[in-house]
Image (cartoon, rainbow, N blue to C red; front, side, top):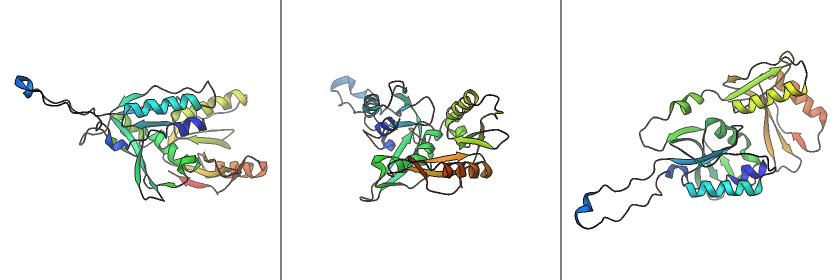
Length: 254
């Protein structure tokens, strides 16, 4: 999965340029001169994983196809699945700035869930070492002045999808509903008789951060409440894992 996530970073074209790559034809001579010129294609090209937590959009179809090819070649497991490059008229993006050059780029995603998940784990990416996130996720249309789709707009409010079990003593939150349902299914299979809540949308979660021993991987561990987060944090500290270490206290995350 790590290789696949990094794969979507290649072939980057600023997503604000969607549709700007179409070539305008030369004006023909004679009577056909009044024919309308071809307009730029007002859309992006996006791919994503079925869990709804990882995805990326590109202004050019060729860049998307190249990223998908890299993902195929570097995926951790042959069972890792992801979509074809599909056209979208709206995307969700955040701004990242290169600390060395000062250059800012828009990094685009097919949904709010994939955008927010990317921000959560941005520090853990190899090519993000000299970059920092400088904005929240927001939606943009390929057609200037057009309102973004209802599907994109309605998703904005669901920052987290959370579930709990064992009398609300344990739980987890994920950016996408699909990933939350995956976690719910895992608990049902592994803990017989567990009393599980449904996956519900929340505006905030409570998270602590962990990183690998060498500092190369970084992620948030998020729960639906402060009490569950604190008990989960204590569990991680007691484990004293040689692979991942806790690097923050529990904090509210939008």
